[in-house]
Amino acid sequence: LVASYFSTLVGMCLPGKRALFLSQQLRFTNPVMIGEPLTFHGRVRKKTESVRLLDLEVTAVAESGEIKVQGSLQVMVMP
Image 1 (cartoon, rainbow, N blue to C red):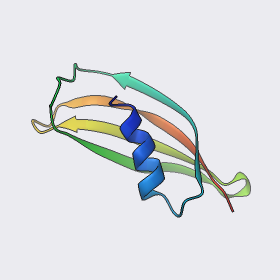
Image 2: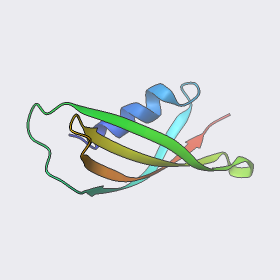
Image 3: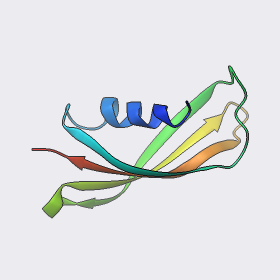
């Protein structure tokens, strides 16, 4: 379930409705408890304009500051 929120990050925070989620690599570094509040962060690491690809670094962080999930996403921004 936690991984699905990264899809929301792509769909709601990247430009327009034309962001296509291509792949993800995630590491669950610490357990996530049911009902535990998390904050999701994404940062564009690399942009390849010729093929309209974005490489994002993502994390899910607990209120305590502990990183629960970290990884990368590859996204294509359609014209």
